[in-house]
Amino acid sequence: MSGTFDLTGSGFTSARTRDRLMARLMTQGISDPHVLDVMRQTPRHVFVDEALAHRAYEDTALPIGHSQTLSQPYIVARMSEILLAAGARQKVLEIGTGSGYQTAVLAQLVGTVHSIERIKALQDKARERLKAMGLNNVRLRHADGMQGWPGEGEYDGIIGTAAALGVPPALIDLLAIGGRMVLPVGAGQRQSLVLVCKTADGVSQEIIEPVHFVPMLGGVVG
Image 1 (cartoon, one colour):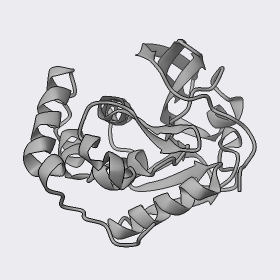
Image 2 (image 1 turned 60 degrees about the vertical axis):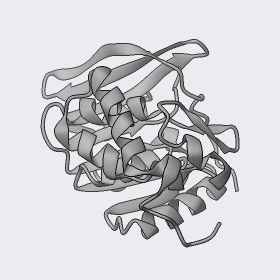
Image 3 (image 1 turned 135 degrees about the horizontal axis):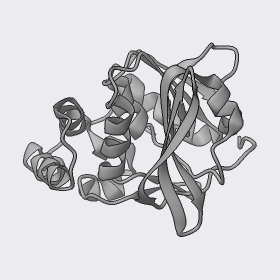
Image 4 (image 1 turned 45 degrees about the vertical axis):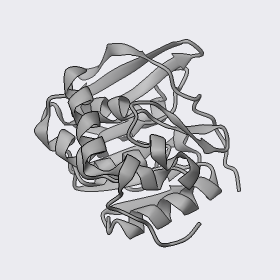
């Protein structure tokens, strides 16, 4: 992949096209102005192969290779909005860097992002894209995301971009008191977006809405 990216866009990736997507997100219930502004400013077209750039601002998931997908904009916005609903997050762990798109959105909304990807080829591309955008508050790690990123302390926010069969206990352990975790849980067509909140009194889980993500897998590739 070239290290040169068109961050502004034209034609199918123009500002007008992005405005139409933002209008759609608002009709779907996304209301946080900061999230909407970041979604509009983030060049989604650089996070897909050039052949798919004309579809970058459709509200749909797109393939990124290695049997992985770039989540639809609504889901990225929704998960980000839920994460921030109880206030700003300073240190967020992302399970599944993928293309780096959700990572880029988060990096503009929170203090720092620690992002884990099990597929080295995807991580390498994501690193180039994030660097091109000048996002210097992101740390990347090639590892098994189901184990989290131990040794870096606790996180006041965690986002999962692949569906686990259940909420991984290792991730609950890494969530700080007052922290929020948003991730898809379930298998096949029976998946739900789940919000996990951790307080001094314990851990609560709330089902938000049905979703469809690729499965969260263990191990590393590459």
